[in-house]
Length: 419
Image (cartoon, rainbow, N blue to C red):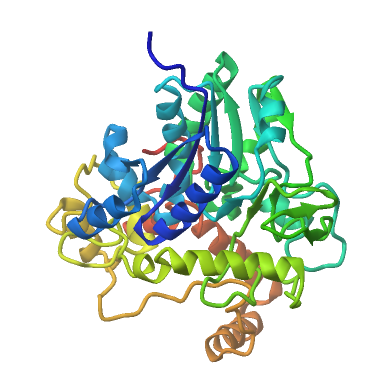
């Protein structure tokens, strides 16, 4: 008789996040030694990466081993964040196929501090366990707010707990189809990678538990309602209950004075339990090779000739009137057409810097030039026409609309899944 597989936790990373997976795995082993731990690597199998993975001792599966039909198209059309999140339900399904009763997904930037008893207790009566971003509103006008949760999702999908059941199978099948087809980071279109879809899960499926334990999935988005206390020996409390797991989303490993680059509400005050928590986590990342792994180039970021793939180049795959099966090949029909249309970016030009709450500067010269241009346009065409133009510009950011215009293809305004 084969071994009965009980509990497994999984996470998903690209090569640059291997230190995060190692910290998560070590913390899970300390808190729940009977849990198995699996890692999906969303990256190319280069000799350097394979050697690094072997040295970690992690139990890994590579994205190409998921055997998705037309996988190169998936790897091309999504950027690094979109692809890591889009493959989540597929990896969960594959893990259940190994025979596990319970499978938990945890984002790699999570650390487990106490046994996952509240999650397992919830799974004793439900098939799907979710954690809301927050349990109380934050009305101070800072970020994140209720508006952010409405834009990006009520539930944080850095965690989901699942039990083998017909309900779970149905949910994963539906979620997978949406993630593989429309797993874009596109809030103007009303979607946000894998996460926004989960707003619908309590409506579509009955065996769902909303976990309200104050120690589960603690992060910058709910610290306005949760007080962290240090009891020593790596034992922390959240609102008087054991801290089960903390989600260090947006942490800057080289600067532990920053709680998260995605928020404006909290400043770390040392010495405090929260500042100690963040500093210790950053130290663990650095001790386990963060600087080494962070230098790994993402394997799906360029064509076979080294040309960097831009967001517009990725979205263009969705509108070309032919089935391009080798989009990473610079000699493919897709890449020839993009070059002819002027969409392919010269490698001599630097990509735009990522924008977040730490890097946006209203006084930046480029921001001031754009604002000046908008004021001039308003004087030329009037306020109402300017607003209509900006709404159209917003429409152009959705999925593949701008590439469609640049390639002289018709806009498609339906919600067809384009794989």
